[in-house]
Amino acid sequence: MKISCIGCGYVGLVVGTCLADMGNEVTCCDIDKGKINKLKNGIIPIYEPSLNDMFERNIKGKRLRFSSDMKTTIKNSDVIFITVGTPPGKNHEADLCAVESVAEQIGKNMKSYKLIVNKSTVPVGTAELVKKIIRKNQTDECEFDVVSNPEFLREGAAVKDFTNPDRIVIGTDSEKAEKILMSIYRGIARADKPVFITDIKSAEMIKYASNAMLATRISFMNEIAQLCEKVGADVKSVAKGVGLDNRIGPRFLQAGMGYGGSCFPKDVNALEELMKQNKIKGRILYAVSTVNEDQRKLILQKIKKLIPSLKGKSLAVWGLAFKPKTDDIREAPSITIIRELQRSGAKIRAFDPVAKINAKKVLKGVTFCNDPYSTVKGCDVLLIATEWNEFRVLDFEQVKRLLKQPNIIDGRNLYEPDEMRKAGFNYIGVGR
Ligand code: NAD
Figure 1 (cartoon, rainbow, N blue to C red):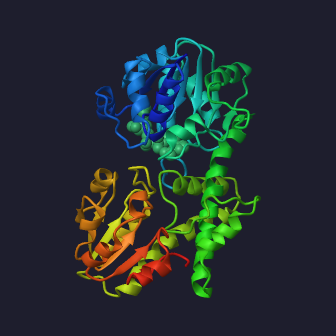
Figure 2 (cartoon, protein in one colour):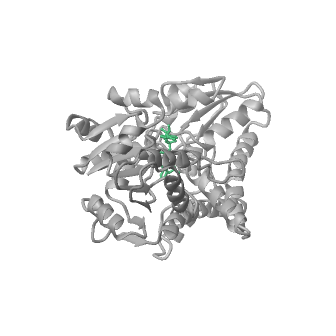
């Protein structure tokens, strides 16, 4: 099958590479010529574990190509995956400019039947919109189908998630499209990991509802964490006890600095906006994002509890990525908190195993260090902002010696409060 992925970001690159690995001829196409040039030279512009080997194997096998020539890419593809970004618009709605632009290009350049698969996260009704735009721009009247096939991969585990997903959701109104897509996914569909076929609008809604549900669990536990602190309970034990209930399950119940990344914040807000447009009050969603924003403020309050005046003080931050195993810093709590600390007059030293390059682009006046130990040298507080495995087991005697004051704010609850206090730290976690 000749497939193209239009949009070579965290989703497009992984999807394209995995589809090539499944034996398809894939072209990944992007308007960003710099990115395409890097890819043509064998450089992956994002950090995603286990993508490298697959990427190299499929380039060598001539199944994976890169192009910024949209016209030729569209003409030569049987199936076109739309994997462009859908960032927040003025009122937090999903900005569909990139999706619309791709639809226009498809209409203008298609000369035969095309199956258009929308993988970008988009509001209900977007497949209909894409169909309209394609029809309006067609120069040759050829048949086409548009299906919704939302992507559920997690950055940091994207290859595994794409090749071994909990489910594959396909929203379609065409038997032909269903057959083609099922033949593509034959390699990864499993008896216990079903392909769920539904109507287009429901498929579009499933993606938003899934992300909103996961974000809700996180905000719920963050609110419970606040209460735990007041009444003397331990949110880690509470999460464990709650998660042991089969009806609830253990995942996405970790209290911390709140969710970040390029999906949850924008998708919760976009869903709330979609509700508003449909005259529904998104009360739960409003609470979910408000609790999430407050969680960052609470971390600042914890820092100020240890160091009331931050002016001239030095703070060490371990972790900049919005979560471990990625270099993505979009909506990362660390970035908001560092900026706020700088506004209070603090000097920041920071370390992240892979997100330094991206963080350098958005943070000014930060000293970026090369390892956890040198980061804490002479600092008044250490803040753990991302739960990288590298931070789990370290020489805390050395950390204490290097810090000017033995203050630790553990925004990810990596350590045991009793142990840290016994080791001589003024230690504050979240909800413990
Ligand atoms: P990204 O920002 O990493 O990549 C988007 C890419 O699209 C960029 O390379 C950009 O240059 C390109 N692009 C923009 N306009 C274009 C155009 N008109 N033509 C061709 N290319 C264009 O975004 P991402 O994180 O890969 O997300 C893509 C979509 O998938 C979004 O809708 C997102 O919500 C959704 N999604 C993301 C994740 C994730 O973990 N990142 C997971 C599931 C779904």
